[in-house]
Length: 467
View 1: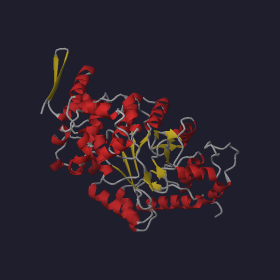
View 2: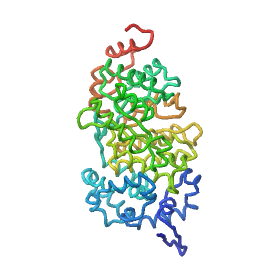
View 3: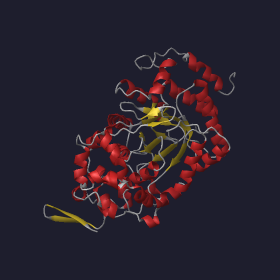
View 4: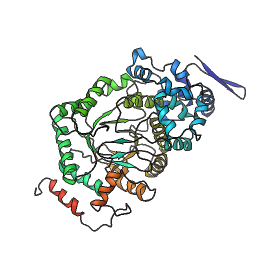
């Protein structure tokens, strides 16, 4: 079905829904690389006008990727809740945006609506939102999850302490993890990206993190971000796995490129729950996404990268995760060229994930060959805090020495806590105070050159130290 609109006597026609969505997308290098973008700002405006007039229920009648050829499309169709969708079923995309910005769209209404929304609907409305809209709507939609800490409570910001090391050195991981804890980072998860993906290394890393957690009695959870199939093997051997991690994408073909499908993810989720480490009613899965992954795998079906990203959230939503984050600038300038595109994409991803009911975090980051810098990341962090982001990722000095990209530093989390008034998860906040990392007001205690007493013993974990 074709879609059209006229601007000052010039008629613009878009032959199908995929083309309409792609042409309406704010400028980004990934869509340019794929040949999907608008020819210029006027065609983009025309597409956005046509998209705003499109009934939301169109997305239920016209699939972007056929269900019979793609299990993600089939999942989206099967999980759609018609009763939840009913209150907005008569709206156009433009009217839906206006409703989202109205007082009627409060936290309860948005939570009730989430099962009735498809990824394509939320991607569509995001394309006609300004940054302010993306912040305002997401801020109204808290999504709370729990393991040993409670993440996503309104007014709070959690952090992933990311102690990566180029050789997976146990000593290096521990020192980096302690560095983050001393700066108050780690209430969402202490999560290591392994340099290798072998089963012995996976087990060694989770045992190391488990020893650290138990020695310090930290109310958090840990994760080795190895492949899900390695996690399944490790759990079968009795490894102390808290969270199971996997990168996911918005099409079956793209997920196959990651070496996964829905059945494997379901197996992993069931295995993690069977361990009994997570409290009743808590969550055990951790997913990572990022605009451009489907395009880089030639698995996008002619769909723009931001809509494909939103479709990845349908995969994540199926498994009730504790954490989901978009690594917004990690794939590179081929997909998000500069700071402006990264900031826009980060807010889009957070907005779409929250509307779909996901506990969204963002890895506020960029690669060293992108046209971006730390000030762009400062701006995105501040905007995300206003939008109620569940968590961000922090590393020592903002420089990940294993993945070779720039993220946020532990100091950036301190800024968010002390300047923007975003304390950590309540259980972690109490622990920080109890071990005297922070004072009664939640501020870092004055540096004395010595570890707080409760953490001094943790140095005995390091190789070569007395047990």
